[in-house]
Image (cartoon, rainbow, N blue to C red):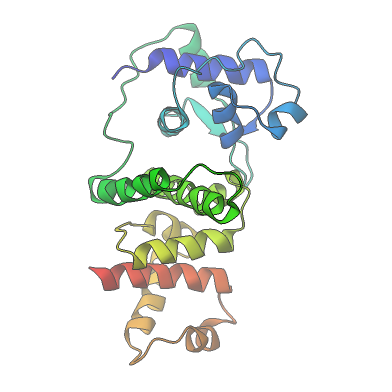
Length: 244
């Protein structure tokens, strides 16, 4: 589909905001969702606030990711996920051209059934605010769906953690659980950037060589070289390979 009008809305929104903003805040802003961050930035009175409320969060996530991939958006030089319009993006807003989006980009084929299972689980949980355990389960499942979408779009896992206001450790825990439940993903786009392909392979080979896996043994062997989070990332790659 041609999403040039949506891309123009993103660029106009960023220009009116006048500063780089985290990816999730931009998504909420476009969709007209209320949040403490948007209120703190004083953006509710902007003309472009809610300019994309005809579409949901997943739609805007797809468009923003594609726009970044194509160079119409750029990140500020930091580890954060704050986005702003690039020079190319500003030119596009003045003179739009076709901006084609593959409608199948929203999720890879391997994970569609897993996503459907999670979405079915949300439906089965009663919307009863008095039952906090059920509400927590629903929120957790929605977060898992977002995590799968983020991996499909090759979003850095630390950026995802920041956008969801959760710790990186929580992301790793959820990812381990999902893989044990049968999720088929590839996170080497992230591990190769963080650790390097050769280092990841060395760690995975070491894990494969153990008669019985022990994270304590991995930490004992490599803990002076890698952080525990880095070793857990390698362990997740190891888990994925074990499932194949």
